[in-house]
Image 1: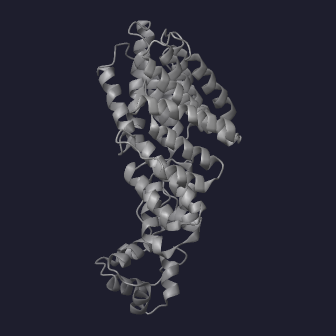
Image 2 (image 1 turned 30 degrees about the horizontal axis):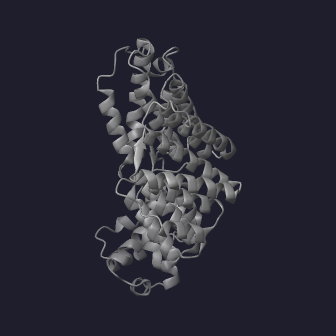
Image 3 (image 1 turned 180 degrees about the horizontal axis):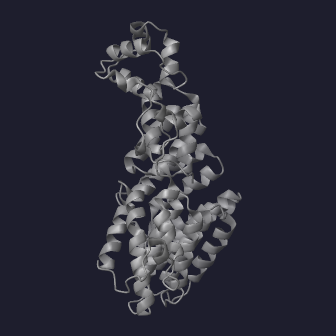
Amino acid sequence: MSVVDDAGSSDPTVGERIELRRLELRLSRRLVANLVGRSEEWLRLVETGRLRLDSVEVIMRLARALRIEDFRDLIDWPARREMPECRTVTDLLRPMRSAILDHPAINAAALWEGNSRRSQAAPAVDISTALDLYESIWSGPRGRYSQLAQQLPIALAQMRQHYWYSGGADGPEHLIRLYHLCRELCSRAGAHDLALIAADRGMLLAGSSTQRVVVAASAWHVADALIQWGRTGDGHWYALAAAAGLSSDATGGTDDDAAALRGALQLLAAQTAATVPDPAETKRLLAAAEHTAVRLGEHRQVHGVGFGRDEVGLTRMEAALACSDFDGVIQAASSTVLSEKCAAGRRARFHIMTARAFVGLHDEMGAAFELTKAADSSDEDLRYDTDAHRTLRSLLRRDNHLLRRDLVRLSHLAGFNGYAMSEAR
């Protein structure tokens, strides 16, 4: 995952504003250039940021041609040419990093915050209700990264203190769920070191549980954290070992819960097998997971781990993408019908993978359309998905004039802004 700037933190460049206004008025580049007394090529260079407006007279003509009331909107102020001081992933997750690395035994945050003592009381808000809210935000379409990056560190600090000072009197389940949410956020945002620490903390707590499904769900998070970090070999054997552990009768949950978790772990192992590549092992694991998904019917969520036909289809796409089998990605996408229960982030991933395949097949229109669908599914996922960035940069380099308006919007959603757009070219 790349560290990128927040899309909402700077305005469009002058060139982008000119082009967007021209498209809004449905004026051709040639017509506007003629009204200004310049060439069509000159206007193209201005719109793409390769040429600056350095004449007040030309700026006034452009403002009149584009019906812009305040000509100062077309002045390229120096501040606009600098890399904006906007929030990066490092800034976004700074409170999370402090919360995960801290421990009640050393109370490091008290030194950072200037407090001599931190409260030992239980969280003021019912933690079960809060966890339901956090999980709802994470599966939702709007602001799932920014909202949880703000709320989870506070909840984690409070919950860890309470668990520490109470000696775990209320059990570890709530704290495990919280660690799993922190892990997912960190993995998706690209903070893989923090993600693995959070996953390991959850696994440590789950180790004392008599419920094998709790252990298996925690193991799934460890395996996924390893895979997201590129440690596919470690993630592969970890997932298979956890799946084998669910063969025991003493799972502590329903048979269907155990089956769903086993299937989810098999999908992780299938995804890593595809990177070797080991087609036979990938096919075997996918077939086993699909058999379970068909038997279980609808999508299931077990201790925060989702499994169902949606996930089988998405893993087929991941496996094909890992081998750069773009036709295979499109084929898997065409046979995958996402259910209403599919989380917004997973739906966005579906469209991002499809877009990546389309750009690999030189279908620029299809790629731009799928990226737009991804942004509609989850407004922040374009900022943190590596494949989304690769796809968008490929489209920017190809500079298809028919897609310029879409690419301007997508670039802002991805956090590229005018600076990154000009760099991509």
